[in-house]
Amino acid sequence: MSLIKWDPFREFNTLPARLAFWGKDWEEPLSTTTYVPSVDIFETDNEVVVKAEMPGMNANDIDVRLENNVLTLKGERHFEKDAKEENYHRIEREYGTFTRSFALPRTVNGDKVSAEYRDGILKIVLPKKEETKPKAIKVAAA
Image (cartoon, rainbow, N blue to C red):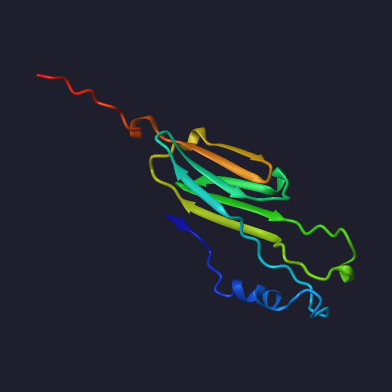
């Protein structure tokens, strides 16, 4: 159902930080890893809903596109330097640009999509087409 760019070396980027304990390896080079927002996708009778975790971002840094039934999320989570780089002991939060794409069912009505960003969560609601919604059929007794 989803198209995800897989990076086989992603876990290797964070391996030294996982092996080091606080107070050791003060000379560890500072680096940021690739940011990939976590996503939940669920479906109701009337819509498909996508929720993506994007804490610390601005709505202006997020681009949502729906093209040929593929939903694409693009954006950038900026590294904010609150202190001088040499004063950091460890950087574990992920930063950088990201792109996530998801194939959607043909039942989605692309003309009525809505997106809302609040409290670090991007919520995209994709209503279903009227003709694809389930309809109850009453059975008459003979």
